[in-house]
Length: 275
Image 1 (cartoon, rainbow, N blue to C red):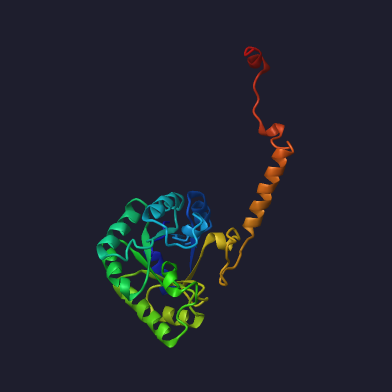
Image 2: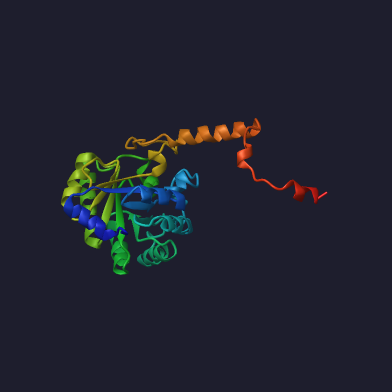
């Protein structure tokens, strides 16, 4: 059965943990979906993981549509959420609704995610009023990395912690169905979770959140440019892949691959007629 935003609401009420992983293509989405993960986030982290950018700033709406549609084709049960990239919603409420609509129509999303608190509540309300579910994102918001001065834990001072709580309540009031908390101290994230009626999805925010999200390439050991503290490697898939690529390279050059069993036959009578 296809999971929806109602699945998230029911999980919060029943105190059942939610799971979310990123994906950017059909094959990976299909594997994650078949594993029973509740939601797939087509994150603008594709800028780092797939496109090789140093940050997420350069990712476009067209990038998100292209990858989102591929993921949607592979996800039969998981809720598909697509990130709204940098400057696709900050410029105006009108732009936010138009771009969210494109992600739904062309990207085949079931919901969109955007970064920010009270400052983007008008956008959240307008998008939800248009019938598009919105997941909010607070704490370390990668699109604001230049303003933060780097990847740093958020909400550590009294003022910052108070603002985080206020922002969480604000996005809930604006209509968000869930909120991602990234790089937030565990006790603060737990406090926010207890105050909200909507589920919190943590990434570097501790076990007190209603669910967890990770970038699949991080948890599989496939992305080695940097590994955040909060990442657990559930498999060293990257090393397995490198070993396989190396073995392929060596066997082709040593002429041990392909073997006879990997080839197709043709009748000698046919070949004789070609001369």
